[in-house]
Length: 601
Image (spheres, rainbow, N blue to C red):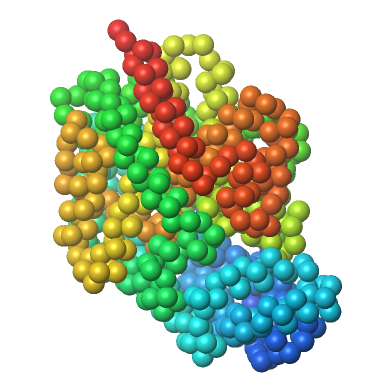
């Protein structure tokens, strides 16, 4: 029997851990910042009642906000990184709590600002701009506040809502601790009797295995555990939906969806158009599932069969060093400037590479305006991990370029465009890999991998989005989100999206309980829209070269200096229509046809 041990944090080679010392040399240095941050919070609070008094007072407060953000961002990120690298560390948990308390204090202290800015009449605001040239820099930020006038409350009510944010974080926090620290899963057993630890980091690699016994064992281990805690998970998800509905009602939005998308200047029609376009393409997905069943040669196709490659003997181990080399070659179409920034990240420990005990699952990139981005991975030497690397570095360099080209006021791009840069990198990687082989079997393997990117990003994330919308609507109507109701709806959606050629495994109905993004306020749909935009942008970059790259780098440098749809239009894709989604789905259908041809006997 073979044991696969997950190392403790202190057993990792430091070269594969992120350099949080670039933010603070020690935890003591981090803690020493607390009085300075508290001082800035007190200074913001002291501005209450002054914003409409004069142009100078308004400008002083806006500059103070920027100063706070410059100080608070690295402070918050450092605490988050300490927690995420080992969620079981009591000191990291304490730091995370201290950080959250200060951020809530800051929100409470500045809650007066939006109502006061809204109380300034248009005539007085115009006079302020004339009197104080420094306000011109903040005009867009002020316009964004003032356009939401009907959704902003009195100063006392805004302060109360800011205070309520402390409670709103509880479902996500508890769900995170449940998933990342408290839940443990029985080892999976392979066909030879070897044991394999099941964690969030190992689960998908286990489902990638050609060993069907191991896949089934891992599948049943994970979801069997969630079944024991499904009522707790349902209560947490219901708490999340209720807090979103509470804030939407308080701000007089028609729904939580409207409230969420309004924050990023995205029309709700884009959300609904995505679901409708994907639903129209169900026949293509169902055809792919039938092909997968046929090529795997199984009498019954199960959900633990849909990740493993359907072309045999092509899976390979890709060490992290080789992954970096592949990334540099694949992203060469983006030019030398982009590659030099990528190398800087690779060589200077921006990345926390491998899984350790207590480490947060999955992967993310986190930009820090005054430093550099930080990337969390759980790298396991698979091709999927190479795609995750270029994905997260796409995020990282988006943040890096926006920080270099925008002031702190406008550097933080909104969520809607956040997944575009990452997925464009993935598309360029796939095109590079496809262009690097003439071998029919290798090409079939890569085409299948590309199909899986469509399935997991465009189809699956849209299914998540539809499920999240259903949860939100149930809550809006006052219908409880019980474990039974959640499982029933989630199972139904899987049957609709994947069709009748896959078994209705009861375990898959519990998948909602392990998806952390359901606590991120209508985030997941943007993976699908971002994927569609990225497919269009990568095709333009490969076809047109330098002019397309220039437009694309302009987009990456844009931060939030324009609304997200306009930023994407500048790069060459119009997401205000469903056409980019439909074009991506047509590509998927063509890839299914190519896969059928490549695998004909």
